[in-house]
Length: 216
Image (cartoon, rainbow, N blue to C red; front, side, top):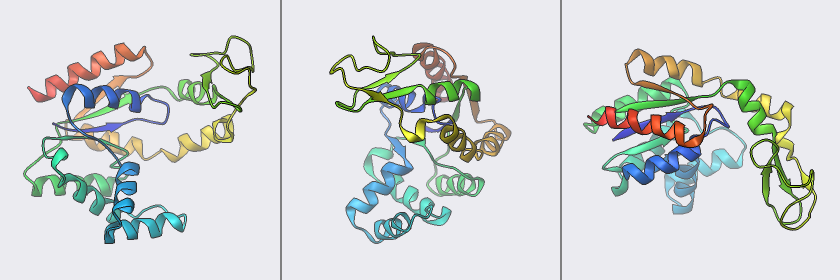
């Protein structure tokens, strides 16, 4: 089973990915993981990736595709995969199709976990972290017993700079690539949209049903 997972930050992709990989026995492949693995292996490919990241540049489409192709050849990906964070652009999506075609494989489904941006904003800006022990809370979903105070160590809670409303809005804007990818895969009949603004178990029930249908 070959699956692509799409969704904006805060949509719950990571949570759903954990459940998918556990039940369907496919590796969760993210670009970040692939880049770190390539760098750790100190291959020529890894050194090229490191040069991009060390200079503060985004890794090019061409190099990202080469890293993905290399990852697909590893034993655990031969039975399938769950791609997260790739493709990010239309050229990457087209290159992914070409790569899989060469390997005699194809994408079975593209899951798009959709959550309204105002809900994402609330999810991402509500996080608070303890300065002393690092415990994480959420003002709406997992609030501390006493405002601004950690339940575990009574340390002071704070908001990370990248969790402020302004920072989160900028992060969401950077993911504008999702819209053309959604249309790209919808046109190919592969897109399966899931309402992510529900309890985790309800979202996964839909995800599971759609993946089983894609396998049938």
